Image (tube, rainbow, N blue to C red; front, side, top):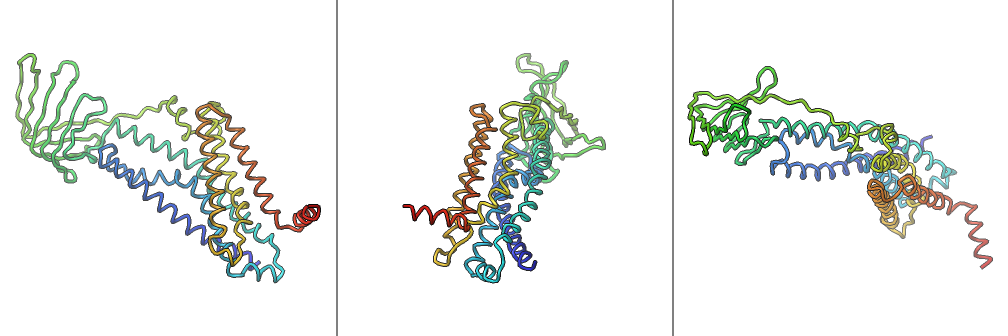
Length: 368
């Protein structure tokens, strides 16, 4: 039907635009936080782009339902204000057309939400955790920060570089505080050098005209060595998967793993994911009657109440998830109680202006 395709096209265009704008806003906020961590030395600079890309799935969890909700609200509201809806109904178009449009768009959005919630989000969380652990165990020489003392993950060495330009480095200071058995503490100083990578994937610091001071102040025994070329090889370490840590980070688990784990955090995450899926059609059908506006109400006459209902819903669900993860409440009861209440509200709103409800309201007024 031409009218159905027209409404779907207009709503889908609005939803896509809103989705892009919301992603851009959240993307910018996340970029600021990541850049702040990188500047403060809390994150290597080579992890900025991977973290941004992997963070899209986390942003999409709440943005996908919101984009459909706002897309329907804005598009249907505009059609009412421009009297296009009135013309459609006057020409014999049934209001069921709107519900078919909403059902079609809900199925598309649900498909994206399922793919994100079931596969992409757990995978992204797992990859981010792997990158963090790998960066801690194998700090990248490409992410060295100039003018800062940096300690090794084991705390047995300190590195200072006064100048960094791509792979060229200057004013290098390396202190080996707790060397291996048979060796003494040492300090290496050089004016310039560069970072390399050999064929086996090992990271190499090559220093020109370096000086090494080896010994202990308590023994008054020092050995001073001069090098035309001094190389330090850093072999990468393998990140070992810790099953206990994975089970603790429930965002990385699949639906079956969450169900089998049966802990407060796992139960809260399990019902939160189900709520994200259920919220797409729920909020979409809830907003259909709220999008109906009269010309006297203006463009935002229905916008604020609808948005308030949406925010209250997700704030309540977020609170239930947090308390459920701490074992204070049963998420299976409270989260789905909120879903049922909003489902009843959606039914009442959608039936409010039907002939059946009008007859009931007239009877009630006549009896009063």
